[in-house]
Image 1 (cartoon, rainbow, N blue to C red):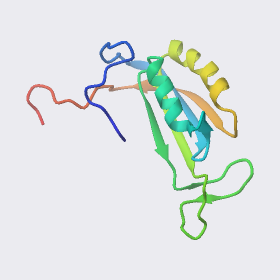
Image 2 (cartoon, rainbow, N blue to C red; image 1 turned 30 degrees about the horizontal axis):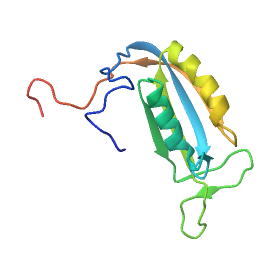
Image 3 (tube, rainbow, N blue to C red; image 1 turned 135 degrees about the vertical axis):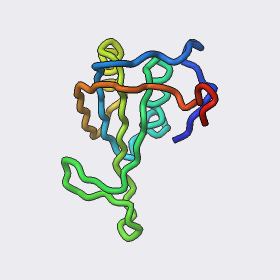
Length: 133
């Protein structure tokens, strides 16, 4: 994952606090999906950051299949061009409500979106505290 440790939120504010019950949204798309000539996963990530979401993670799968039952795999023999991509977003109700119209706008092809309640136990940046490595 590519991180900029000096990055601030969209308006320069520090990290938001996430604690207790939140919502996890999983967005399943294909690696070949595009949004305005850019990979959809990257476009969604940039949009969510600009909208002030707490964070999102893009995970690239090595194999999968969807409603068409065609297996997409990273196997060199198969040379699949549409490997699965998973985007996970954990945030509060207010931000997740803002997410739904964004997904309606940007998910124009095949996709699967799931939502579930999760309990956040820890949400912190990777910088060391108190001299610990």
